[in-house]
Image 1 (tube, rainbow, N blue to C red):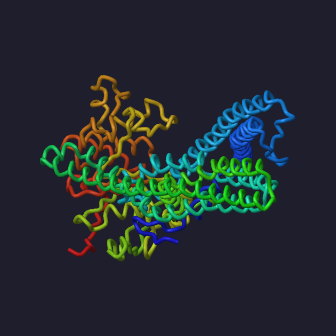
Image 2: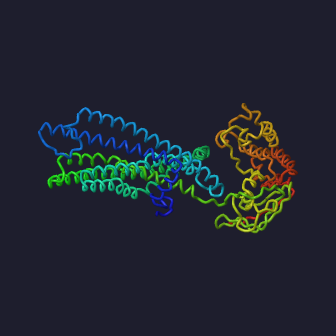
Length: 572
Protein backbone atom coordinates (compact mmCIF):
# COMPACT_ATOMS: atom_id res chain seq x y z
CA UNK A 1 0.00 0.00 0.00
CA UNK A 2 1.26 3.43 -0.93
CA UNK A 3 1.35 6.39 1.37
CA UNK A 4 -1.46 8.89 1.04
CA UNK A 5 0.55 11.89 -0.09
CA UNK A 6 -0.27 14.40 -2.77
CA UNK A 7 1.71 12.48 -5.35
CA UNK A 8 1.39 8.93 -4.07
CA UNK A 9 -1.22 6.24 -4.33
CA UNK A 10 -2.54 5.23 -0.94
CA UNK A 11 -3.57 1.71 -2.05
CA UNK A 12 -2.27 -0.83 -4.55
CA UNK A 13 -3.36 -0.81 -8.19
CA UNK A 14 -4.92 -4.25 -7.60
CA UNK A 15 -7.21 -2.81 -4.90
CA UNK A 16 -8.13 0.17 -7.06
CA UNK A 17 -9.07 -2.20 -9.89
CA UNK A 18 -11.21 -4.34 -7.57
CA UNK A 19 -13.06 -1.23 -6.36
CA UNK A 20 -13.69 -0.08 -9.92
CA UNK A 21 -14.70 -3.55 -11.10
CA UNK A 22 -17.31 -3.64 -8.34
CA UNK A 23 -19.24 -0.97 -10.28
CA UNK A 24 -19.82 -3.43 -13.17
CA UNK A 25 -22.18 -5.77 -11.26
CA UNK A 26 -25.44 -4.31 -12.67
CA UNK A 27 -24.22 -4.99 -16.22
CA UNK A 28 -22.54 -8.34 -15.64
CA UNK A 29 -24.53 -10.20 -18.39
CA UNK A 30 -23.34 -7.69 -21.01
CA UNK A 31 -19.77 -8.04 -19.74
CA UNK A 32 -19.99 -11.84 -20.03
CA UNK A 33 -21.30 -11.42 -23.59
CA UNK A 34 -18.37 -9.13 -24.44
CA UNK A 35 -15.89 -11.70 -23.09
CA UNK A 36 -17.44 -14.52 -25.15
CA UNK A 37 -17.49 -12.41 -28.32
CA UNK A 38 -13.92 -11.20 -27.76
CA UNK A 39 -12.59 -14.69 -27.09
CA UNK A 40 -14.24 -16.09 -30.21
CA UNK A 41 -12.83 -13.19 -32.21
CA UNK A 42 -9.27 -13.83 -31.06
CA UNK A 43 -9.64 -17.57 -31.67
CA UNK A 44 -10.72 -16.80 -35.25
CA UNK A 45 -7.62 -14.63 -35.73
CA UNK A 46 -5.33 -17.26 -34.20
CA UNK A 47 -6.71 -20.15 -36.25
CA UNK A 48 -6.54 -18.13 -39.47
CA UNK A 49 -2.75 -18.12 -38.95
CA UNK A 50 -2.56 -21.77 -37.88
CA UNK A 51 -4.77 -22.95 -40.75
CA UNK A 52 -2.90 -20.87 -43.33
CA UNK A 53 0.51 -22.10 -42.21
CA UNK A 54 -0.78 -25.68 -42.06
CA UNK A 55 -2.14 -25.41 -45.58
CA UNK A 56 1.02 -23.78 -46.97
CA UNK A 57 3.18 -26.38 -45.21
CA UNK A 58 1.15 -29.18 -46.79
CA UNK A 59 1.41 -27.62 -50.26
CA UNK A 60 5.18 -27.17 -49.97
CA UNK A 61 5.67 -30.69 -48.59
CA UNK A 62 3.67 -32.18 -51.46
CA UNK A 63 5.69 -30.23 -54.01
CA UNK A 64 8.96 -31.37 -52.45
CA UNK A 65 7.71 -34.90 -51.84
CA UNK A 66 8.16 -34.64 -48.06
CA UNK A 67 6.18 -36.50 -45.41
CA UNK A 68 5.27 -34.21 -42.49
CA UNK A 69 3.70 -37.09 -40.57
CA UNK A 70 0.22 -37.98 -39.45
CA UNK A 71 0.09 -35.38 -36.70
CA UNK A 72 -0.76 -32.49 -39.02
CA UNK A 73 -3.68 -30.33 -37.88
CA UNK A 74 -5.17 -30.55 -41.36
CA UNK A 75 -4.67 -33.63 -43.54
CA UNK A 76 -4.81 -31.57 -46.68
CA UNK A 77 -4.03 -34.55 -48.87
CA UNK A 78 -7.63 -35.66 -48.27
CA UNK A 79 -9.36 -32.27 -47.91
CA UNK A 80 -10.19 -29.94 -50.74
CA UNK A 81 -8.08 -26.74 -50.62
CA UNK A 82 -11.18 -24.82 -51.58
CA UNK A 83 -12.90 -25.72 -48.31
CA UNK A 84 -9.89 -24.59 -46.28
CA UNK A 85 -9.74 -21.25 -48.12
CA UNK A 86 -13.48 -20.72 -47.54
CA UNK A 87 -12.98 -21.52 -43.85
CA UNK A 88 -10.18 -18.92 -43.62
CA UNK A 89 -12.38 -16.29 -45.33
CA UNK A 90 -15.30 -17.06 -42.98
CA UNK A 91 -13.05 -16.78 -39.92
CA UNK A 92 -11.69 -13.46 -41.20
CA UNK A 93 -15.21 -12.06 -41.64
CA UNK A 94 -16.27 -13.40 -38.25
CA UNK A 95 -13.18 -11.82 -36.66
CA UNK A 96 -14.32 -8.37 -37.80
CA UNK A 97 -17.96 -8.90 -36.76
CA UNK A 98 -17.06 -10.38 -33.36
CA UNK A 99 -14.52 -7.63 -32.62
CA UNK A 100 -17.10 -4.94 -33.45
CA UNK A 101 -19.75 -6.61 -31.26
CA UNK A 102 -17.28 -6.97 -28.37
CA UNK A 103 -16.25 -3.29 -28.59
CA UNK A 104 -19.91 -2.23 -28.78
CA UNK A 105 -20.71 -4.12 -25.58
CA UNK A 106 -17.62 -2.76 -23.80
CA UNK A 107 -18.32 0.85 -24.74
CA UNK A 108 -22.00 0.49 -23.83
CA UNK A 109 -20.90 -0.66 -20.36
CA UNK A 110 -18.26 2.08 -20.13
CA UNK A 111 -20.51 5.01 -20.99
CA UNK A 112 -23.34 3.74 -18.79
CA UNK A 113 -20.93 3.42 -15.87
CA UNK A 114 -19.43 6.86 -16.49
CA UNK A 115 -22.92 8.34 -16.16
CA UNK A 116 -23.42 6.41 -12.90
CA UNK A 117 -20.02 7.51 -11.56
CA UNK A 118 -20.70 11.16 -12.37
CA UNK A 119 -23.98 10.88 -10.48
CA UNK A 120 -22.10 9.39 -7.51
CA UNK A 121 -19.46 12.16 -7.67
CA UNK A 122 -22.10 14.90 -7.58
CA UNK A 123 -23.85 13.09 -4.73
CA UNK A 124 -20.51 12.92 -2.87
CA UNK A 125 -19.88 16.64 -3.46
CA UNK A 126 -23.36 17.42 -2.15
CA UNK A 127 -22.63 15.28 0.92
CA UNK A 128 -19.23 16.89 1.53
CA UNK A 129 -20.42 20.46 1.00
CA UNK A 130 -19.81 22.94 2.31
CA UNK A 131 -17.29 22.14 5.08
CA UNK A 132 -15.07 19.72 3.15
CA UNK A 133 -15.18 21.76 -0.07
CA UNK A 134 -14.30 25.15 1.39
CA UNK A 135 -10.76 25.95 0.34
CA UNK A 136 -10.59 23.05 -2.15
CA UNK A 137 -9.27 23.87 -5.62
CA UNK A 138 -12.32 24.14 -7.83
CA UNK A 139 -10.21 23.45 -10.92
CA UNK A 140 -9.00 20.18 -9.37
CA UNK A 141 -12.58 19.17 -8.56
CA UNK A 142 -13.60 19.98 -12.14
CA UNK A 143 -10.70 17.81 -13.32
CA UNK A 144 -11.99 14.87 -11.23
CA UNK A 145 -15.54 15.31 -12.52
CA UNK A 146 -14.49 15.63 -16.17
CA UNK A 147 -11.01 14.39 -17.14
CA UNK A 148 -10.50 11.77 -14.41
CA UNK A 149 -13.97 10.30 -14.80
CA UNK A 150 -13.66 10.31 -18.60
CA UNK A 151 -10.31 8.50 -18.41
CA UNK A 152 -12.03 5.59 -16.65
CA UNK A 153 -13.65 4.83 -20.01
CA UNK A 154 -10.30 3.21 -20.87
CA UNK A 155 -10.61 0.95 -17.85
CA UNK A 156 -14.20 -0.14 -18.42
CA UNK A 157 -14.03 -0.41 -22.22
CA UNK A 158 -10.43 -1.61 -22.69
CA UNK A 159 -9.24 -3.23 -19.47
CA UNK A 160 -11.72 -5.50 -17.69
CA UNK A 161 -12.94 -7.57 -20.63
CA UNK A 162 -9.45 -7.81 -22.28
CA UNK A 163 -8.16 -9.39 -19.06
CA UNK A 164 -10.98 -11.95 -19.03
CA UNK A 165 -10.68 -12.48 -22.80
CA UNK A 166 -6.95 -13.14 -22.44
CA UNK A 167 -7.52 -15.70 -19.67
CA UNK A 168 -10.26 -17.46 -21.67
CA UNK A 169 -8.40 -17.46 -25.00
CA UNK A 170 -5.07 -18.54 -23.50
CA UNK A 171 -6.75 -21.36 -21.59
CA UNK A 172 -8.30 -22.69 -24.83
CA UNK A 173 -4.99 -22.38 -26.64
CA UNK A 174 -3.15 -24.26 -23.91
CA UNK A 175 -5.64 -27.12 -24.32
CA UNK A 176 -4.92 -27.08 -28.05
CA UNK A 177 -1.15 -27.06 -27.44
CA UNK A 178 -1.53 -29.96 -25.01
CA UNK A 179 -2.81 -32.08 -27.92
CA UNK A 180 0.65 -31.58 -29.46
CA UNK A 181 2.89 -31.65 -26.37
CA UNK A 182 2.62 -30.98 -22.65
CA UNK A 183 5.99 -29.20 -22.83
CA UNK A 184 4.60 -26.80 -25.45
CA UNK A 185 1.70 -26.05 -23.08
CA UNK A 186 4.17 -25.25 -20.29
CA UNK A 187 6.15 -22.86 -22.51
CA UNK A 188 2.93 -21.21 -23.65
CA UNK A 189 1.73 -20.80 -20.06
CA UNK A 190 5.04 -19.22 -18.97
CA UNK A 191 4.97 -16.88 -21.99
CA UNK A 192 1.40 -15.76 -21.33
CA UNK A 193 2.07 -15.07 -17.65
CA UNK A 194 5.34 -13.24 -18.33
CA UNK A 195 4.03 -11.04 -21.16
CA UNK A 196 0.48 -10.54 -19.89
CA UNK A 197 1.10 -10.20 -16.14
CA UNK A 198 4.70 -9.86 -14.99
CA UNK A 199 5.76 -7.20 -17.52
CA UNK A 200 2.71 -4.90 -17.06
CA UNK A 201 2.80 -5.29 -13.27
CA UNK A 202 6.49 -4.41 -13.16
CA UNK A 203 6.22 -1.36 -15.37
CA UNK A 204 2.91 -0.41 -13.76
CA UNK A 205 4.63 -0.32 -10.38
CA UNK A 206 7.47 1.76 -11.83
CA UNK A 207 5.08 4.38 -13.18
CA UNK A 208 2.26 4.30 -10.62
CA UNK A 209 3.25 7.37 -8.61
CA UNK A 210 4.31 9.19 -11.78
CA UNK A 211 0.82 8.67 -13.18
CA UNK A 212 -0.79 10.06 -10.02
CA UNK A 213 1.61 13.04 -10.04
CA UNK A 214 0.61 13.68 -13.64
CA UNK A 215 -3.12 13.70 -12.79
CA UNK A 216 -2.58 15.90 -9.70
CA UNK A 217 -0.50 18.44 -11.61
CA UNK A 218 -3.06 18.39 -14.40
CA UNK A 219 -5.71 19.30 -11.81
CA UNK A 220 -3.45 22.05 -10.38
CA UNK A 221 -2.98 23.56 -13.83
CA UNK A 222 -6.76 23.49 -14.37
CA UNK A 223 -7.16 25.45 -11.13
CA UNK A 224 -4.56 28.01 -12.19
CA UNK A 225 -6.19 28.50 -15.59
CA UNK A 226 -9.64 28.83 -13.99
CA UNK A 227 -8.34 31.38 -11.45
CA UNK A 228 -6.62 33.34 -14.23
CA UNK A 229 -9.81 33.52 -16.29
CA UNK A 230 -11.85 34.67 -13.30
CA UNK A 231 -9.25 37.23 -12.28
CA UNK A 232 -8.44 38.46 -15.79
CA UNK A 233 -9.38 42.08 -15.02
CA UNK A 234 -7.10 42.18 -11.98
CA UNK A 235 -4.25 40.50 -13.87
CA UNK A 236 -4.43 43.14 -16.62
CA UNK A 237 -4.89 46.02 -14.17
CA UNK A 238 -1.83 45.16 -12.07
CA UNK A 239 0.31 44.01 -15.01
CA UNK A 240 0.52 40.47 -13.63
CA UNK A 241 0.09 38.79 -17.01
CA UNK A 242 3.73 37.86 -17.68
CA UNK A 243 4.21 36.29 -14.25
CA UNK A 244 0.91 34.41 -14.49
CA UNK A 245 1.80 33.18 -17.96
CA UNK A 246 5.20 31.99 -16.73
CA UNK A 247 3.51 30.10 -13.88
CA UNK A 248 1.22 28.31 -16.34
CA UNK A 249 4.15 27.57 -18.65
CA UNK A 250 6.05 26.10 -15.70
CA UNK A 251 3.02 23.96 -14.84
CA UNK A 252 2.74 22.77 -18.44
CA UNK A 253 6.45 21.93 -18.54
CA UNK A 254 6.15 19.93 -15.31
CA UNK A 255 3.26 17.97 -16.83
CA UNK A 256 5.25 17.40 -20.03
CA UNK A 257 8.21 16.05 -18.05
CA UNK A 258 5.97 13.55 -16.27
CA UNK A 259 4.33 12.62 -19.57
CA UNK A 260 7.77 12.10 -21.13
CA UNK A 261 8.77 9.86 -18.22
CA UNK A 262 5.63 7.78 -18.77
CA UNK A 263 6.35 7.64 -22.52
CA UNK A 264 9.90 6.38 -21.87
CA UNK A 265 8.51 3.64 -19.61
CA UNK A 266 6.00 2.80 -22.33
CA UNK A 267 8.81 2.48 -24.88
CA UNK A 268 10.84 0.23 -22.59
CA UNK A 269 7.80 -1.92 -21.94
CA UNK A 270 7.00 -2.37 -25.62
CA UNK A 271 10.61 -3.35 -26.31
CA UNK A 272 10.70 -5.88 -23.48
CA UNK A 273 7.32 -7.27 -24.59
CA UNK A 274 8.41 -7.80 -28.21
CA UNK A 275 11.74 -9.33 -27.20
CA UNK A 276 9.97 -11.65 -24.75
CA UNK A 277 7.45 -12.87 -27.35
CA UNK A 278 10.19 -13.78 -29.82
CA UNK A 279 12.23 -15.34 -27.02
CA UNK A 280 9.36 -17.66 -26.04
CA UNK A 281 8.73 -18.43 -29.71
CA UNK A 282 12.38 -19.40 -30.07
CA UNK A 283 12.26 -21.55 -26.92
CA UNK A 284 9.08 -23.28 -28.13
CA UNK A 285 10.49 -23.89 -31.62
CA UNK A 286 13.77 -25.27 -30.28
CA UNK A 287 11.93 -27.53 -27.87
CA UNK A 288 9.62 -28.81 -30.64
CA UNK A 289 12.62 -29.61 -32.85
CA UNK A 290 14.24 -31.47 -29.96
CA UNK A 291 11.06 -33.47 -29.33
CA UNK A 292 10.93 -34.30 -33.04
CA UNK A 293 14.47 -35.62 -32.87
CA UNK A 294 13.41 -37.83 -29.97
CA UNK A 295 10.60 -39.13 -32.18
CA UNK A 296 7.82 -37.80 -29.93
CA UNK A 297 6.22 -35.41 -32.46
CA UNK A 298 6.13 -35.17 -36.25
CA UNK A 299 7.52 -32.43 -38.50
CA UNK A 300 3.97 -31.22 -39.11
CA UNK A 301 3.41 -30.80 -35.39
CA UNK A 302 6.53 -28.61 -35.21
CA UNK A 303 4.92 -26.32 -37.79
CA UNK A 304 1.50 -26.24 -36.11
CA UNK A 305 2.95 -25.94 -32.58
CA UNK A 306 5.27 -23.04 -33.49
CA UNK A 307 2.52 -21.18 -35.38
CA UNK A 308 0.05 -21.70 -32.52
CA UNK A 309 2.31 -20.11 -29.92
CA UNK A 310 3.43 -17.12 -32.00
CA UNK A 311 -0.13 -16.35 -33.15
CA UNK A 312 -1.72 -16.68 -29.70
CA UNK A 313 0.10 -13.80 -28.00
CA UNK A 314 -2.45 -11.27 -29.32
CA UNK A 315 -4.68 -11.20 -26.20
CA UNK A 316 -1.73 -10.91 -23.80
CA UNK A 317 -0.11 -8.19 -25.94
CA UNK A 318 -3.32 -6.24 -25.36
CA UNK A 319 -2.85 -6.77 -21.60
CA UNK A 320 0.77 -5.71 -21.75
CA UNK A 321 -0.09 -2.48 -23.59
CA UNK A 322 -2.80 -1.71 -21.04
CA UNK A 323 -0.29 -0.58 -18.45
CA UNK A 324 0.84 2.19 -20.82
CA UNK A 325 -2.37 4.05 -19.98
CA UNK A 326 -3.23 2.10 -16.85
CA UNK A 327 -0.94 4.22 -14.68
CA UNK A 328 -2.98 7.32 -15.40
CA UNK A 329 -6.26 5.38 -15.38
CA UNK A 330 -5.58 3.94 -11.92
CA UNK A 331 -4.41 7.36 -10.71
CA UNK A 332 -7.71 8.83 -11.92
CA UNK A 333 -9.54 5.96 -10.26
CA UNK A 334 -7.70 6.61 -7.00
CA UNK A 335 -8.58 10.32 -7.07
CA UNK A 336 -12.21 9.49 -7.82
CA UNK A 337 -12.40 6.81 -5.10
CA UNK A 338 -10.82 9.17 -2.55
CA UNK A 339 -13.57 11.68 -3.27
CA UNK A 340 -16.35 9.06 -3.11
CA UNK A 341 -14.98 7.59 0.13
CA UNK A 342 -14.28 10.89 1.89
CA UNK A 343 -16.36 11.29 5.02
CA UNK A 344 -18.29 14.56 5.45
CA UNK A 345 -17.63 16.78 8.46
CA UNK A 346 -21.37 16.99 9.05
CA UNK A 347 -23.68 14.11 8.15
CA UNK A 348 -27.25 14.68 7.00
CA UNK A 349 -30.01 13.83 9.47
CA UNK A 350 -33.11 11.87 8.41
CA UNK A 351 -35.92 9.97 10.10
CA UNK A 352 -36.83 12.59 12.76
CA UNK A 353 -40.21 14.24 13.21
CA UNK A 354 -40.69 17.45 11.22
CA UNK A 355 -40.84 20.68 13.24
CA UNK A 356 -41.74 24.31 12.62
CA UNK A 357 -39.76 27.40 13.58
CA UNK A 358 -40.62 28.79 17.01
CA UNK A 359 -37.36 30.53 17.92
CA UNK A 360 -33.58 30.09 18.03
CA UNK A 361 -31.29 29.60 21.00
CA UNK A 362 -27.46 29.53 20.99
CA UNK A 363 -26.12 28.14 24.25
CA UNK A 364 -22.48 28.54 25.33
CA UNK A 365 -20.99 27.39 22.05
CA UNK A 366 -17.29 26.98 21.17
CA UNK A 367 -15.99 26.50 17.65
CA UNK A 368 -12.52 26.21 16.12
CA UNK A 369 -11.22 25.85 12.59
CA UNK A 370 -8.72 23.04 13.20
CA UNK A 371 -6.65 24.48 16.07
CA UNK A 372 -7.72 28.11 15.71
CA UNK A 373 -10.41 29.22 18.16
CA UNK A 374 -13.06 31.34 16.44
CA UNK A 375 -15.99 31.42 18.88
CA UNK A 376 -15.75 30.86 22.62
CA UNK A 377 -18.61 30.48 25.14
CA UNK A 378 -21.06 32.48 23.02
CA UNK A 379 -24.80 32.59 23.73
CA UNK A 380 -27.82 34.40 22.34
CA UNK A 381 -31.56 33.89 22.22
CA UNK A 382 -33.83 34.97 19.38
CA UNK A 383 -37.58 35.14 19.68
CA UNK A 384 -39.80 34.50 16.70
CA UNK A 385 -40.25 37.54 14.46
CA UNK A 386 -37.32 39.54 15.90
CA UNK A 387 -34.44 41.23 14.07
CA UNK A 388 -30.99 40.74 15.60
CA UNK A 389 -27.81 42.41 14.36
CA UNK A 390 -24.36 40.89 14.87
CA UNK A 391 -21.63 43.49 15.10
CA UNK A 392 -17.90 43.13 15.66
CA UNK A 393 -14.44 43.24 14.05
CA UNK A 394 -13.40 41.01 11.15
CA UNK A 395 -12.50 37.53 12.39
CA UNK A 396 -14.84 37.64 15.38
CA UNK A 397 -16.92 34.75 13.99
CA UNK A 398 -20.04 36.55 12.76
CA UNK A 399 -20.20 34.75 9.41
CA UNK A 400 -19.09 31.52 11.06
CA UNK A 401 -22.01 31.74 13.50
CA UNK A 402 -24.47 31.90 10.59
CA UNK A 403 -22.87 28.77 9.09
CA UNK A 404 -23.14 26.98 12.43
CA UNK A 405 -26.84 27.88 12.59
CA UNK A 406 -27.17 26.46 9.06
CA UNK A 407 -25.25 23.41 10.38
CA UNK A 408 -22.58 23.63 7.75
CA UNK A 409 -20.34 22.68 10.69
CA UNK A 410 -21.12 21.30 14.14
CA UNK A 411 -20.12 23.24 17.27
CA UNK A 412 -17.29 21.89 19.42
CA UNK A 413 -19.14 22.51 22.69
CA UNK A 414 -22.57 23.83 23.67
CA UNK A 415 -25.60 23.60 21.40
CA UNK A 416 -27.76 25.47 18.92
CA UNK A 417 -31.47 24.76 19.15
CA UNK A 418 -34.45 25.62 16.97
CA UNK A 419 -37.86 25.21 18.60
CA UNK A 420 -36.03 23.61 21.54
CA UNK A 421 -34.55 20.92 19.24
CA UNK A 422 -30.79 20.61 18.79
CA UNK A 423 -29.99 21.31 15.12
CA UNK A 424 -27.95 18.07 15.15
CA UNK A 425 -31.23 16.17 15.61
CA UNK A 426 -33.36 18.04 13.06
CA UNK A 427 -33.82 16.46 9.63
CA UNK A 428 -31.44 18.28 7.30
CA UNK A 429 -34.14 18.97 4.70
CA UNK A 430 -36.42 20.23 7.46
CA UNK A 431 -33.67 22.53 8.76
CA UNK A 432 -32.95 23.92 5.27
CA UNK A 433 -36.66 24.52 4.65
CA UNK A 434 -36.75 26.92 7.62
CA UNK A 435 -33.75 29.01 6.54
CA UNK A 436 -32.76 31.49 3.86
CA UNK A 437 -29.07 32.43 3.73
CA UNK A 438 -27.71 35.43 1.84
CA UNK A 439 -23.92 35.36 1.71
CA UNK A 440 -21.45 38.22 1.30
CA UNK A 441 -20.78 37.16 -2.28
CA UNK A 442 -23.99 36.20 -4.06
CA UNK A 443 -23.41 33.30 -6.45
CA UNK A 444 -25.31 33.54 -9.71
CA UNK A 445 -25.62 30.82 -12.33
CA UNK A 446 -25.29 31.17 -16.09
CA UNK A 447 -29.02 31.51 -16.60
CA UNK A 448 -31.78 34.10 -16.74
CA UNK A 449 -32.35 36.61 -13.95
CA UNK A 450 -35.75 35.02 -13.25
CA UNK A 451 -34.24 31.56 -12.83
CA UNK A 452 -31.45 32.98 -10.66
CA UNK A 453 -34.00 34.50 -8.31
CA UNK A 454 -36.17 31.36 -8.18
CA UNK A 455 -33.18 28.96 -8.49
CA UNK A 456 -35.12 27.24 -11.26
CA UNK A 457 -38.02 26.31 -8.96
CA UNK A 458 -41.11 26.02 -11.21
CA UNK A 459 -43.33 26.36 -8.14
CA UNK A 460 -42.95 30.15 -8.34
CA UNK A 461 -44.76 32.20 -10.98
CA UNK A 462 -43.21 35.20 -12.70
CA UNK A 463 -45.51 37.40 -10.60
CA UNK A 464 -44.03 35.90 -7.42
CA UNK A 465 -40.53 36.55 -8.73
CA UNK A 466 -41.35 40.15 -9.66
CA UNK A 467 -42.89 40.78 -6.24
CA UNK A 468 -39.69 39.57 -4.53
CA UNK A 469 -37.56 41.65 -6.91
CA UNK A 470 -39.57 44.78 -6.12
CA UNK A 471 -39.05 44.19 -2.39
CA UNK A 472 -35.32 43.88 -3.06
CA UNK A 473 -35.32 47.12 -5.12
CA UNK A 474 -34.09 45.35 -8.28
CA UNK A 475 -37.28 45.17 -10.39
CA UNK A 476 -36.84 48.60 -11.98
CA UNK A 477 -33.30 47.76 -13.09
CA UNK A 478 -34.37 44.38 -14.48
CA UNK A 479 -37.22 45.89 -16.49
CA UNK A 480 -34.80 48.42 -18.00
CA UNK A 481 -32.87 45.56 -19.64
CA UNK A 482 -33.73 44.52 -23.19
CA UNK A 483 -34.88 41.01 -22.23
CA UNK A 484 -36.13 41.91 -18.75
CA UNK A 485 -36.34 38.89 -16.47
CA UNK A 486 -35.15 36.64 -19.35
CA UNK A 487 -31.79 38.43 -19.47
CA UNK A 488 -28.81 36.05 -19.22
CA UNK A 489 -26.46 37.09 -16.39
CA UNK A 490 -23.32 35.36 -17.72
CA UNK A 491 -20.98 33.06 -15.80
CA UNK A 492 -20.99 33.91 -12.07
CA UNK A 493 -23.17 36.92 -12.92
CA UNK A 494 -20.21 38.78 -14.44
CA UNK A 495 -22.50 41.01 -16.53
CA UNK A 496 -23.95 42.55 -13.35
CA UNK A 497 -22.44 44.83 -10.73
CA UNK A 498 -21.77 43.71 -7.16
CA UNK A 499 -24.79 45.65 -5.89
CA UNK A 500 -27.08 44.15 -8.54
CA UNK A 501 -25.93 40.63 -7.70
CA UNK A 502 -26.47 41.36 -4.02
CA UNK A 503 -30.03 42.55 -4.56
CA UNK A 504 -30.82 39.40 -6.59
CA UNK A 505 -29.57 37.37 -3.61
CA UNK A 506 -31.87 39.31 -1.29
CA UNK A 507 -34.75 38.81 -3.74
CA UNK A 508 -34.17 35.05 -3.43
CA UNK A 509 -34.55 35.26 0.33
CA UNK A 510 -37.73 37.31 0.00
CA UNK A 511 -39.17 34.91 -2.61
CA UNK A 512 -38.75 31.78 -0.52
CA UNK A 513 -40.26 33.44 2.62
CA UNK A 514 -38.50 31.20 5.12
CA UNK A 515 -39.17 31.80 8.84
CA UNK A 516 -35.43 32.33 9.54
CA UNK A 517 -33.44 34.69 7.32
CA UNK A 518 -29.65 34.91 7.72
CA UNK A 519 -28.06 37.93 6.06
CA UNK A 520 -24.28 38.32 5.86
CA UNK A 521 -23.41 41.96 4.98
CA UNK A 522 -26.55 42.27 2.79
CA UNK A 523 -26.07 45.95 1.95
CA UNK A 524 -22.27 46.18 1.66
CA UNK A 525 -22.42 46.84 -2.11
CA UNK A 526 -25.45 49.13 -2.08
CA UNK A 527 -25.69 52.92 -2.15
CA UNK A 528 -27.54 54.78 0.59
CA UNK A 529 -30.83 55.00 -1.34
CA UNK A 530 -31.04 51.28 -2.18
CA UNK A 531 -29.85 50.37 1.32
CA UNK A 532 -32.71 52.37 2.80
CA UNK A 533 -35.22 50.59 0.53
CA UNK A 534 -33.83 47.15 1.48
CA UNK A 535 -33.80 47.98 5.18
CA UNK A 536 -37.40 49.16 4.99
CA UNK A 537 -38.36 45.86 3.33
CA UNK A 538 -36.44 43.90 6.00
CA UNK A 539 -38.13 45.86 8.77
CA UNK A 540 -41.49 44.94 7.30
CA UNK A 541 -40.39 41.31 7.13
CA UNK A 542 -39.48 41.40 10.81
CA UNK A 543 -42.95 40.49 11.98
CA UNK A 544 -43.12 37.47 9.64
CA UNK A 545 -39.58 36.12 9.76
CA UNK A 546 -36.81 36.01 12.34
CA UNK A 547 -33.83 37.85 10.90
CA UNK A 548 -30.14 37.71 11.84
CA UNK A 549 -28.20 40.53 10.26
CA UNK A 550 -24.39 40.70 10.04
CA UNK A 551 -23.07 44.14 9.17
CA UNK A 552 -20.31 46.65 9.89
CA UNK A 553 -22.58 49.57 8.98
CA UNK A 554 -24.39 51.33 11.80
CA UNK A 555 -27.09 52.37 9.32
CA UNK A 556 -27.81 48.72 8.61
CA UNK A 557 -27.95 47.65 12.24
CA UNK A 558 -30.33 50.51 13.06
CA UNK A 559 -33.36 48.41 12.12
CA UNK A 560 -32.45 45.65 14.61
CA UNK A 561 -34.43 44.96 17.78
CA UNK A 562 -31.22 43.71 19.38
CA UNK A 563 -27.54 44.33 18.61
CA UNK A 564 -25.02 41.73 19.78
CA UNK A 565 -21.34 42.63 19.74
CA UNK A 566 -18.93 39.77 19.06
CA UNK A 567 -15.26 39.82 20.04
CA UNK A 568 -12.44 38.35 18.00
CA UNK A 569 -10.78 35.22 19.42
CA UNK A 570 -8.13 35.03 16.73
CA UNK A 571 -4.51 35.78 17.45
CA UNK A 572 -3.44 39.07 15.95
